[in-house]
Image 1 (cartoon, one colour):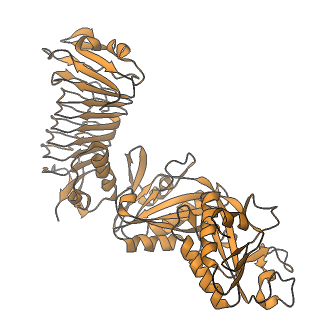
Image 2: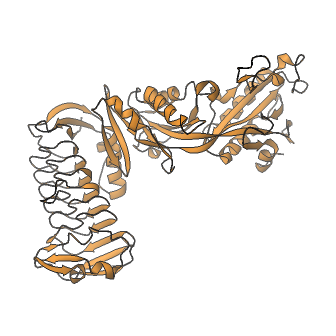
Image 3: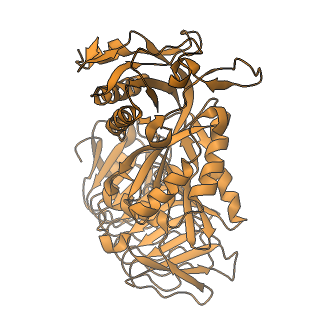
Length: 254
Length: 301
């Protein structure tokens, strides 16, 4: 990325960092110096974003993080605007409760990506969270709106208790995916174990999936193939132990 | 002015401001996209009797449609901004929703004026409908017996122009038809315009009102009827035995002018005596398309 801000990690993280407040409020017009003053917590103690990162570039609505952020939690939590890219893996709770904007993780994400904060009723309520690697357990739990796309595997409970929104999993989906969901869509392009509380409805070609998958390919470079676009999907309705208005769409070669 | 020996009358076509929406229909294959488009644009020649005017604008390649399937772009036009949403809802609801494999999208995404279409049609889903927001646009998924109908929630509406026209005055009915077919062919598929009449051609041009029945909005244009030459104030030159009209609507005046230029040029051929246009003295419609100006800008002589 050539335009926007660059946040380069000064030194490898030795303790967990909570970046939840760094981008939660409006940030797209902030200069590097202003953004450097945003509060974070490092190993439980108050700090500033600039204590961990060298910030440079021009505010253009984009920020790119460089460095090993596997111990950095809650990045882009509550995000409402702009585009956040991480050139590698990230810690837990990335995009927690985000309401808008785009988060792109070039590596893996920890637990609860795009999910609800422990005290919150809702996870993501908007925006797009794209994980080019694997996602830890509980991605998208209690999400209300928005799109999560996981190029690799998803841990257990992806989309569990989701209220609405869309979770696309290109790799294998872990157990209990979609459990207790009210509404929303889980798109499984890889292996998935359908919860017992979902019921098979039909095998068909949902037109809207072509829009979703085409966007993931053109906008985010995910390897969507013609076989995905022209495919049939097995539709399971669920979770019938809850509202039952959600769906799991399982890709099938037939 | 003459174009290849055809006299271009020094007159203008008088056209009106209308509201226009562009509808994109896609389907599994071109056949079903066209089936839906033909039904949607059927009985939509003139607002006088059809409440709206519609036509196929052009065929879209798979790469040009939102879902990557074959499709068609349609322009649907109505006189008022309150009329257009009604026409969109009833026509898409009856002809696209019902047609196998189709989906229906807004073709004017940048238009700031938005009207609800999918937001109304979703109720056919009887509570089982659901929506998805993709790239900032909401789409409704309506369950149907075949599977699922996808329709965009809102469609763009812009001001367009309706009633661009020219008349082909020919020595014979065959010559008039041949010239009209050539003109319509040259205009079909041009971006931003439609020809709402059958094959793009009108044989029954009208005048405002009636000589005898006060309640009639329009009646036959007797000045251009060859059979009435001897009994009315005719506008026909000597030797003219048949007249056909091409009506063109579009998203803006330049699109119509360009289409008229292409159509008139193609229609100027053997057997055609003159090209003229319909107007109301310039008092009713704000858009005036002067034939000689249009043809001179296009290089006609």
